[in-house]
Length: 144
Image (cartoon, rainbow, N blue to C red):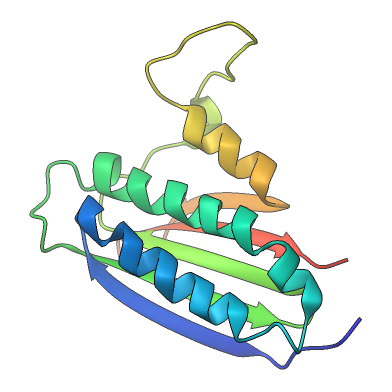
């Protein structure tokens, strides 16, 4: 497997659903730029793009529901060897996703599917409150 150099990308957008296409384009450009360096990133690009979209739209719809649309959402992309990490930073109230009930087959819930989708798309998903008062959703995919 080809080793890629450590690389970091950053995007700051407003908290509006109509910027999701900009977020997806930014992410796909970063993935496509790695095709020659690490084929595994390209092969997981669609899954990671879906995870990013889910995390971003959740930040807009839930974390920032009562905040002005100008409230920023920061997205960090870290590519390091055999690991990709997406971090989505929001300014909403913290919550514990582990308390969400896991949907059972055939059961309809009002919400909570996103967290379980994220965990199936990535190898590691965490959510925590940072010291600066923001929340960080971390989505990690390993290349091995």
